[in-house]
Length: 123
Image (cartoon, rainbow, N blue to C red; front, side):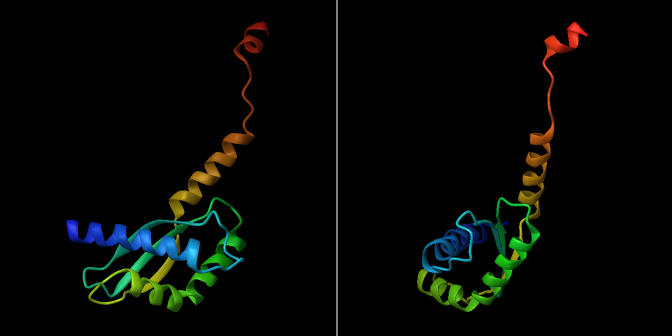
């Protein structure tokens, strides 16, 4: 990936995150939502925005995605004032599966009970 696209992706990630957290003012969006990755196509027409939320509740994730999809026009309008790009890309919001897997693993690790070595040697 060229430096140009790396800079574009990081700038879009920073701006989209700022818009969602500070400018949307939607109480339905969890404040722990964050933009984990942004990938723009080489022609700057499409942009995949991966969002992550530290929860395993699929209903909440689906609801959040629908809210973001319906807010795409507002986000693009705000993004146009923050970033100078050849084209304002169409935003596609997806859940970051890697973060979801990490949350699930952490939940499983919390349920495991470790016994002390002293208990094992006494038996």
